[in-house]
Image (cartoon, rainbow, N blue to C red; front, side, top):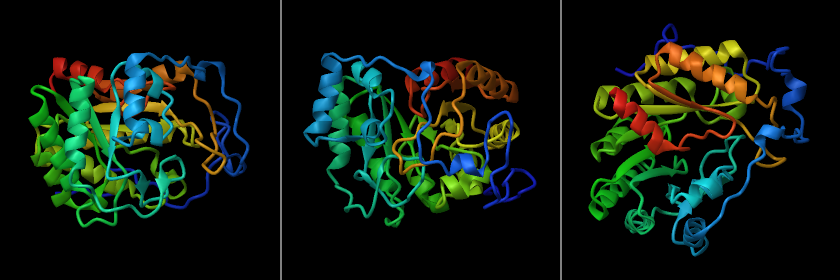
Length: 323
């Protein structure tokens, strides 16, 4: 049964004002700023290049595919492209939601291209990937949220290449269990759905999403197919408190999810939410230990960690310990 009880999961108070917190330096005035904070030294990163980087970039430039790496302005795209890694973005480059942290363009999308799953599979083969990550814009305008496109993409990748591992990073499908079942029936190796932030900040950060609905989705993965592990992720630096982070990690753990990514929120533009605080690498190490102490089997935590960053390494680590 879907998780509904607020006794089991902390739902927070939707729309409650941001609280002041001396540790985080957070208050309403901080969150209303429009000037970007100065990035600390640990957020400076070299930009590798090379033949592999150029190959992926050419595919994107020629319109062969979309990657969330470029659409969402991920700071790891140069590193990942240089290692023949990319997270494929399906169903166009426009999202029907308007999350205030995300750089993906918002607006009405076009009808899904039935040939797109084959193009993604061809890209996976061309790049010689052994681990492919597929995500999408959120398509609330489609009856099943685009679940069938995810399923077809998984099947086409498997037809094109033997032995390739496929991770999907899915939206919440507006709570539609049949849509989630469609994706799971195609047999992804990992089902990823990001919780993104603490429940109190949902009205500010993800106004069209719902914290409990995302927890429900993660819980249903284990109920519908226990053989497919669930994965989730959270951003820090949006105004959350230490207590809220720990409670959110506990909520996610209770769903049966055992893999977690914890990264730093970075403001994509002046139109997006400002950074409330830059979290030090040492603090990220501490959050990894906290999450492992809660019971997660693997946690990647750091300023540059994103939901699909070094995804293959995480899968291997969890597989070696049992899903």
